[in-house]
Length: 166
Image 1: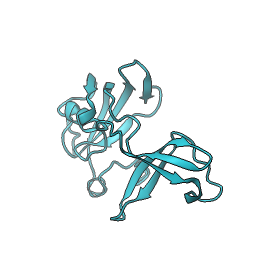
Image 2: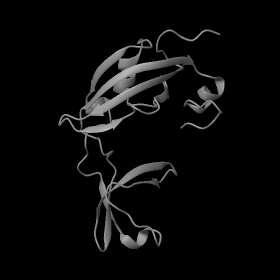
Image 3: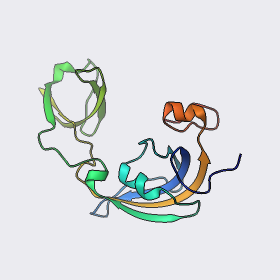
Image 4: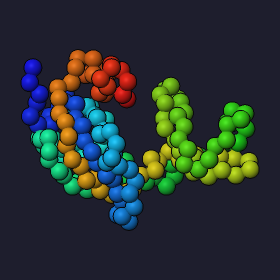
């Protein structure tokens, strides 16, 4: 079976990327390390970047600016909640920036971040830390291959030894 020539739905794509904000601050980068692998069309990366990468080929270099609406959403000022410190397990030391998962009324896990810690309470923020930010990506497409049936069922790529990537 030959490898796909361009990025399309149900392909596993390897990219090197650098992510910066409007301020010029670098948030993340895969350059100098392993490429990021994702399953195209399955929501593994922010929607705005995924859409812009469709149809690109190995070797393509792309600069993409993703607005909040197509990234991590607009910042919701009322999406915080203070909880008593004793609500955290003993020995747990929450620090600003830490991420936790909490269960909502439907039993789904919702990500939250610690915004503030005081003596008596922890303020949780339901906004992603990059909500409200324009995301500037410099991307190089380094690999494209068809996804396996198992990867399609799971909705993400697997590493060379099976289920070792998430």
